[in-house]
Image 1 (tube, rainbow, N blue to C red):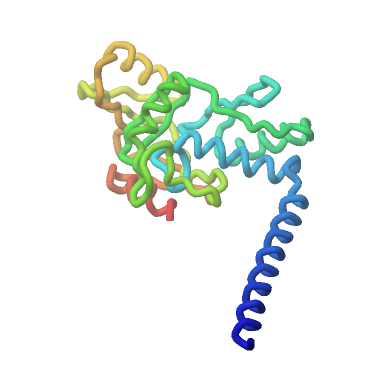
Image 2 (image 1 turned 135 degrees about the vertical axis):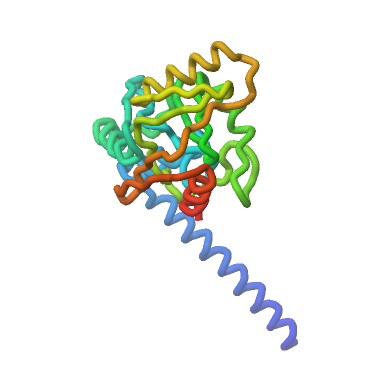
Length: 231
């Protein structure tokens, strides 16, 4: 009899715990304001970086400026990670009932941790590029190294001017993002079958998330910097 009572008590206690947890989850969900500026901005930043395979724990970094498109069809050019955050928040404040997140506008350029730079002309091209993404120590493809808690954090921003070495060993200097796009676009157009990507000539200059500027002397140093901010 005592044994049966113990079993019944354990069952009741376990069942009560499950009900309590479901109640808490229900309260948390109902109290979460999905239309708030903070929630929307964090989610949008997370989505843009995750879908682009960029940011902490992922394969690439955006080469700013990039353009994003909002649900109402308007677009905005953003010059840095923080500028992206401010732009998204401002749009949300002007559109308080909106819930659809912004998307990336193509073409755009991304930089890999080995110093290669790629101009991506479409969403389909990006899918092909992301299929090659294997963040160290994490899953394959689509920037799966990105963790939801990262909330759209970049590692650093590339500073211009930069010198690019093309696969035929020639070099070209880009004074800004537009010039870099032209160099990469022309190379791809004239060498459609090439599987080797253009790469940056070191040293390069980057701006860290704390606003400081750092010189990166080599591909190995860039890889180490990228991996360190992903931890």
